[in-house]
Length: 474
Image (cartoon, rainbow, N blue to C red; front, side):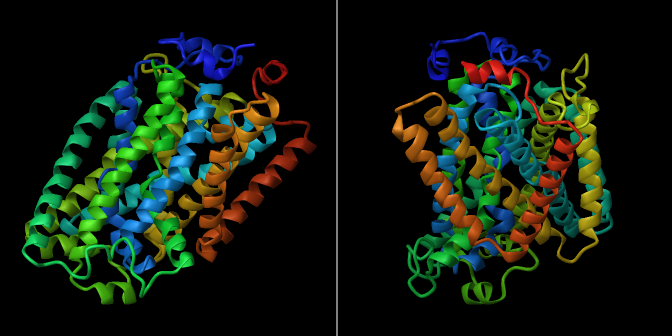
């Protein structure tokens, strides 16, 4: 019997077979290379993501922002390893929904997919809202709602035209973001050399005056928003022309590169914060802490550059790939008849899940406008997105153990038991230390999913996955 790892070790296995062996038809266009996948993951995570939430993470961590991002990267590294293992076993769209459903059981897959919908469906709305608020602060004549509509329409058109168009724009946006980041780092290091720094050189990594494990892990639950996106690469499994092994490697590589950039930029910024005590005591309600730090380091022009770059990166580049990934999740669940079947429609020319793309746009518009009307809109959206992702990742780690260790009798203890167990425990601790509001809203959403599942059983519509019986018997 050939194992999934043996099947993925060949130089270039026929990708379509990976889908058709599970009872599906290859409908999406396979055109993405390893580089495309890597860039997609980096764009989804946004190399300059900490710019937008720096103040919140700085306050929550007591100034130890670099430590928080290192812990977040380690936690996500174990998650990336589990993603890579499950991508080899089940090379198809759907992410955690597919992996938990096929690795454990179809009902568990439904609940995992339902929970991660909090992440995938709401994250575009969050990104659009953050970017629109930033742009409105520079061009107040255009209200936030108008920017919101503009970003959504633009991204929907690009995603409708096909994944190749999205990939081409991703390359351009990634280069632009890296240029802005390089400018900030050079000017920041020069400012530190000129004596503008505050605190010790290693204060962003450890500060005995503020350190506590609950404080740090509570901050990780906020900072982890920056890492969400590497997992989105798994949504493109049916559009990748690479082997499943290289698909998994692209997730790990994207996470590692982004994590390194996050740690470096927040370390430099943390040393340059001009009002450290005030930021820790009062927080960053305006979300301008990073831009204020940039102005202190290099002048007003650097503040404007970093703020505008953040708005464009979140509102266009990041939300573009977020919308693409979300539409693939809806497509995968609809294909298995666990969501309305119209979401599974593929455009005959562009080969994209067209109805799912439009639904994501409509949901983003509705939630974006609603949350814009609330004072706590951004905080509420962020909490829901993070909780959904962390909870779904817990199911992912369990699916690795069940599929490989229990079902297949694997004796690869590191990849199929120890690594997923460590990842599970770290994420569980992060979820426990998340805000009460996030826990409450997240568990309410999970309870709704459980009710839907029970009702489906009572109506004789037990969740099933195509080819699941033959697959398990193997």
